Amino acid sequence: MFVIIGTANVDLLVSGFDKMPGGGSDEFTTNNLVFCDDPLQLMLGGNGGNCAYVLAGLGAPTALCSAAGQDALGDYVHSWLAERHVDLTGFVRHSHWATAFTTIVMDNRLNRLAFHHPGALAALTYADLPRQLLQSATSLLVTSYPIMPGLRPVGFAQVLAEAHARGTITAIDIGPAIGQPAYLAELAPLLPSLDYVIANRHELTVCTGVEDLEHAASILLKAGARCLIVKLGKAGALIRTTGLHTHVPGFAVTTHSTVGAGDSFNAGLLYGLQQHWPIETAARFGNAVAALVVSSAQGVLGSPTLGRVEAFLREMD
Image (cartoon, rainbow, N blue to C red; front, side, top):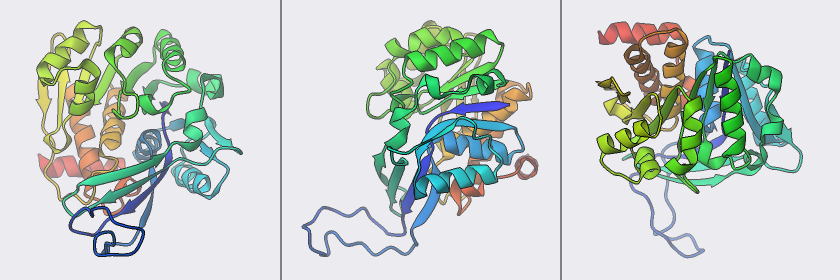
C-alpha cells in the first residue's frame, strides 16, 4: 500500500492567451481584460492528490491523507479520487473550513501566475492520520511539506520515524518552496528516517542556500540524506548518493501544461522503487509518467495506465 500525505485541492486553470496582462482599474479596459481561447478547466490539484491519483491509475493500491471542506469543491476532489479507487480513510472533511483551491493563470508561453487558498489543509494534524492506515504502508511519501503547518515539523517527523522503524520505504518531496520554505535546519532531524529526498533545482537552492546544484546536493548528503533525487523538468532527473552520481534524461513531448508534472514523476518513481527496480530505472519510469501527463490535454486527470507507460517506454527505446 502506498500512503501519500499531502495537499489535495481544486485547480482552476485559465489559459489560451498570448501574454500575461498588466494591472488596471476596476473598469474593463484593454489593460485588464484578456480574451481566452481556451475554456476554464476545473481539475484535481495539490501535490498529494495528484500523486495519489496518478499512482492509483497505474494500478497501485494507494491511500491519501489530506483534508477538504464539506463544500462543492470538496465533493469534486473526493469524487475524482474515489473514482480512481484511492483509499480515502485519511481524507478529512471539515465543516468549518473551505476546500483549498489554486487558480492558475497560464499564457501560451507556459508562464504561470497562481492564487492559492489553503483552506482545510492548514488544519490537518498528526491526530487526523489513521494509525491503522499508516501501519499498512509499504511506501510512504510526505509531500507539500511547507504548506501543511499543522504537521510540520513534529507531526511529519513522528510519522516518518514510525514508518522507518517498521521498514516502510520513506520519501519526502520538500517543495514547493513558497510561504515558509523547508530549510535544511528544519529538515535535518528528519533525514535519519528518510530513504529518499526529492526536490527540484529551485527547492534545493532554497533549502541549502546554495545555487550551485552539485554543491547544494553535497550539503544535503553531508547532512545525512541517503539518496537525493533532483527533478529537472523536461531535462529529466539527477540522482545523488555518496556512491552514485548520475543523470536520467527526460523525454521530448509536446507540452499542454506543466501543472502536476513533478507530482506525476513522484508517482512513477515511487511505483518503481516499490517494485525494487534500480533507482535509475525507477527515475526513468517517473520521467515517462510525467511526460505522458504534461502531453495530455486533461493534465493529471489524463494520467496513464501502467500499460500505456510501458508502451511509451518501448516506443522511446
